[in-house]
Image 1 (tube, one colour):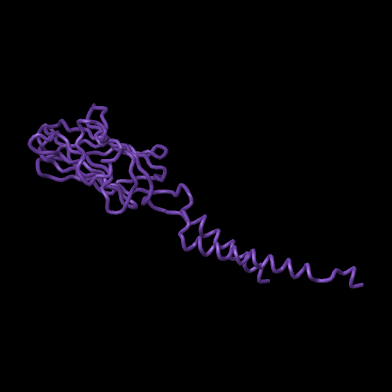
Image 2 (tube, one colour):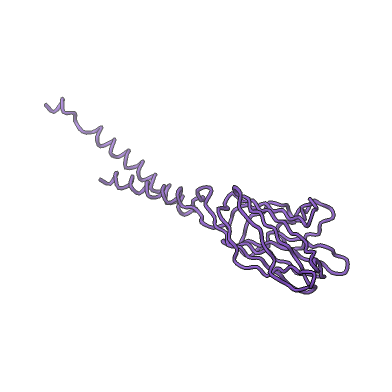
Length: 223
C-alpha cells in the first residue's frame, strides 16, 4: 500500500512539473521590425548605422528580445536634428502599446506618414484594438482618429498606422494580445527536490519489498 502511495505522489509531481505552462507573454521571445513610409530599413535594428536606439531599450542588443515586466522592448528616434521623434513598442503580459512622442510636427495637411510594425512571437494567438489616439489630418487641417490596419498571420502581428503629429504631443495605439503556451514551463527547484525525494522513497520501498519477498520461503519448500 505504501509503495502504491509513493507511485501516486510521483505521478502528481510529474503532472505539476511538466503540464504547468504560462498563459501570458512574459518570458517569451519577440522579434520586432518598424519601417516608415516606403523605406525598407528596419528602424528597430541596432546594427543599422543610421538608426538611433534610445538608452534603456532592449533592442539595443538586437531585434529579438525577451518580454520582461517593466521593460521597454523596442525603441528608435527619428529626425534628430533639432529634436527627435521617439517611437516605442512596449509589451506587457497581455498588451502591446505603440507610442510616439513628436519632437517636431510631421505628416500634416492630408499627407500622413505610414508607420508599419511587425512583431513575431510563437506565443501570439490573437490581437484586438483597445484604444487609439493617433491622428490624421485632411487638407482642411481637421483631425480625425487615424485608421488602424492590423492582423495576425501565424505567429506574426502586422500593424499599419497613418500618423499626423504635432510637436510636443504624445500618441498611443494599445492592443490586447492573447497568447498560448508553446512549451511546458520548467519545473521550479523546489519541485525538482520534492520529485527527487519521492523517487528516492519509491526506489527504497521497492528494494525493501524485494528483499522481504526474497527472504520468504517458497510455497514448494513449505509443503
